[in-house]
Image (cartoon, rainbow, N blue to C red; front, top):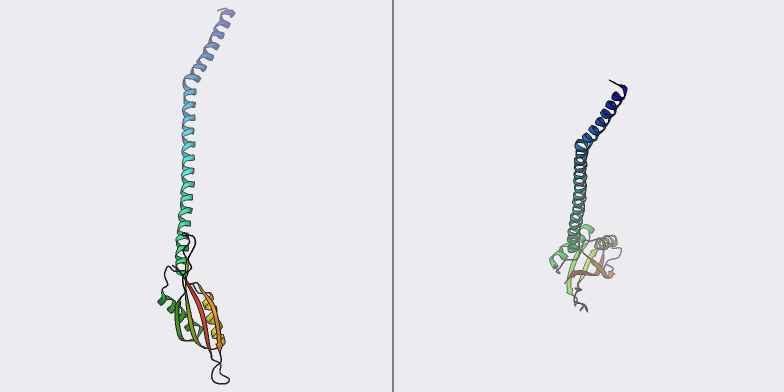
Length: 186
């Protein structure tokens, strides 16, 4: 075999190898690479969807927590400013505060104050019950009673205070007359 024929055969074999490698590349590697890209795209989209769903679930959880907080807030407002006068509850609270303050509750009288007429129908007026309370006890007990009224759950406002001395000299106990306004939603 001549060297020129050998060269020609080597060149043809080289072209055959080059065409074979192109054939293998385009028939086997490119479709597999495209399949890999497609699977990667699906994986990325599923991961993004999972992340979005997780963020949405967290957001819904936060909203549910906020609405539960609002329900608790609404219950607290309903306790502090009830929807009706509820005189027995007021009486119970005033007696309980008197016991805790170690002061004697002598008498109570309740008076409904007239409701203000709102100009806007969306705003409901706040009702007021005026309670006239006669107490008997020491000045420190009175201070404790008034302090407990201020920090009570139900909204109450001290309107008037009158302190009278006892009939005996050097007596530590005094007669107290206080007027308290108790509020409710009408």
